[in-house]
Length: 456
Image 1 (cartoon, rainbow, N blue to C red):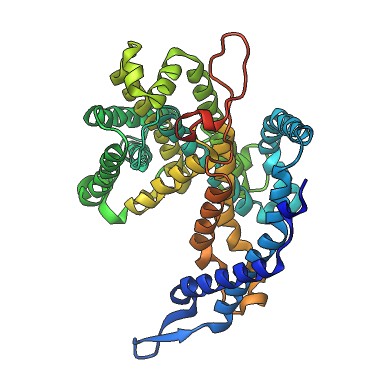
Image 2 (cartoon, rainbow, N blue to C red):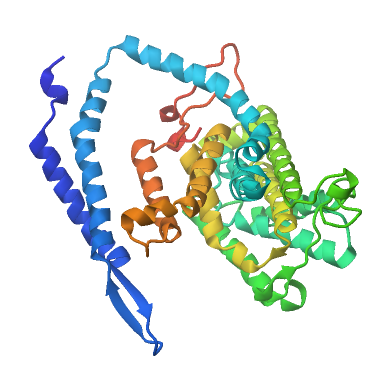
């Protein structure tokens, strides 16, 4: 192996670090270097934050320097590694894939118990709700959108519309007719699936960018309807006082008929949070199970055929109209389930909860996780949603960047940085390979390079 293949070039590393620092300075100058504040006369004044700006520039330059000095030579050496080493890495990956799913299922099953053991009843609500329930909602939404985008190859930028339909369907029917959550949960999914079919009909002949534009318009139309149909949706004011789900008719309140009193426990809001956690966990597992089963059925194979080549799909005699409609309907149904749970969990909904940013976040989870990969979508949801939530707990950074530093203001900056990093290192998603849905004799892993646009 020639030594020049991965020789450390100190001068080049310094040059790359200086260039990265210069670019970071130009990018962060308007975002971090300047800040507008309001004075006593309600006038805006411009303040500078040079120490914070220079700290960010130093971090970027230092990271680039370490990459050029350490990471790049290591990657070059790994590329020239013998096949035996690659085989060992493949064996480790296979073992990880074999045991990851059972371990993950066991962890999420005992997560509330672990939280209670570590932080007690006082701090458990925050960790179970913000990290457990919130992440599982996006995992479920990602798996639902994965049917439309990852399996059927239909780019949907208005997926949040089905989420909103499920939430408002539950909220309006529960408040107007007093129906229970368990009755309205399937009804909200059916209504969202119906709207998925309504969206599917106008876009049957569209694909690619045109399909994305129409679905984006559909999402905005639903949001504007929620804003302007004030007699029904209450407009921007939203709907409050939404009934909460009960445990077989037992409410989670402090009354004598409440859950704690019935079982002789001291009242605590953590019981309701744990109940909601296992409820959304069950819904997410149902979504994953149904998706896996559908992929092995003719309709699932038709989705994948449509994704790879619609013309060839038609030539094989597959009804592309029904295939597209079933994809939109199934994806919309799971979004409706998640929306009804969201409304029951929050007790209040408004159009501000269903903006385009939500659709973009869900689509990013699917793309970054690896389109068509259930495990990849789950990991991406944990990284993206959990990563943005963990910034609320980074108050110790104030000792590094100053007392005025608020980590929550930089959540989207970190979010964008993480997305760019993943697209550079794993452009086909975190999980770029998958097992075929159907195999004739032997089941082998399919590389993303062999699948159209890396989908798989």
